[in-house]
Length: 598
Image 1 (spheres, rainbow, N blue to C red):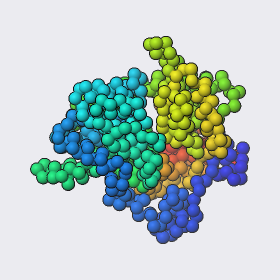
Image 2 (cartoon, helix red, strand yellow):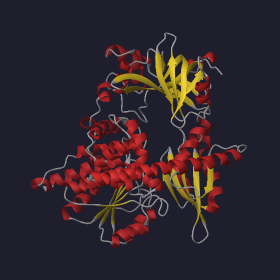
Image 3 (cartoon, one colour):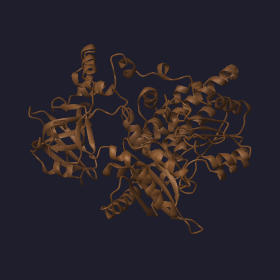
Image 4 (cartoon, rainbow, N blue to C red):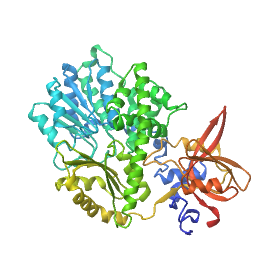
């Protein structure tokens, strides 16, 4: 199917997407191209990401010196820093209460490394995903109090933990909250609540993840200690040494890599390349990362392995790995996480298959929300399954794992993922305020909640009504944005090397995606379990290696395998392919369309 307004006339690709050109300010693109002597395609890539001639230098060289704000600009930062600094000076027993995902693990490890560098220590408590669920709970906080803990710092959680923090306050346990999730007008009781998404913040740093908030808090605490003379007789720690953890948390929490986040990740990846963190070094070795790490390795190689402990293993494995200085312990933990990650993939596929069957069984039901429930589904994988369903159906998706409690009641633990333009987190918070949830919260693009079994139908109807107008305004057909078209010969090592300098790539600064136009498949085969590898040839005779990951069972994969000699438009990202000391270019195929339909 063709469409003159679609990029290369591709209205429906082999994966069902409409191709469109990424919006670009043509005047800015021309100014960048001419003013800085860039290839036209690179100027367009920069302009499409909002870069101007005035901001180009900062974009290409993002520094914390230029972009890190004064910590005191955040609400409650000063009392938070003062209280944590006092605990360090006085040697008080302190615990960090973290989340079981990468953002929580990196935040907890940051605090532990900071405390240890000062000769102090901090206990790390990560709740069991299945037994305790997300965020602070009263039983755990009171247990910490009973064990002598005087101060608890929550990271990546706490902003909506009203009951738990009220119980802590009643017991005389002081709590500092470091979070970034959506806040409500009313805040729970605490010594301080630092959160760039508080409603009384100006929103300038609302895209920070918990690791970013934690790092800025450490900067503030360090300043308080310095001003109080704490470092007169001891060395001051180099906080920049821990930016590898901030980079990992920032990339894996899928926050926009713009502004401060971009600087944190850019500098953090440099630290990561030095392999100073034994846990990250061991995990890289176990995962087979041999090259210099980039945002891809952080998000798709290291991150899932750190997450695996919280999903199907021990919740604190990730934080332990990232905070240990013992290479032997680091390797042992990394190998355990590798095993848990393999187990996670198996469980995830089984739950996904069941979820797809449930969706298919309700195929006739008109809905703006994919909402599926299942008994016995592992709560550790429902977030990933929700993301898969969201991608497949281009609709917000909620996956609910049902379990029967000891008293015979049914409880559902759920995770949701949304599409652009639909604020799922606000809908979940509204549902909690309506009394439909036992707990819940989240972001625009992701949410989690706990629901009683007898409220599931009412909740489904409520969420559907809450988001239906937003979904109606969202595009019905999924789109694939492209930065331009290249010939096979145009995909050169020089171009890819130049594009690499525009990273780190991620949300808010997506990796440039191009269409290789009118390329013929001269060879295709299957590698690994289900990847399709190709050799492409252009009209000029130039050749290009390409691979489509996990594509064997897709329409695209089959078309490539059976389409020898057939002209295709192929969309994807370009990477340097290093082999035996030589360099070439490889296309990582995201999508394809028959060129003859154009």
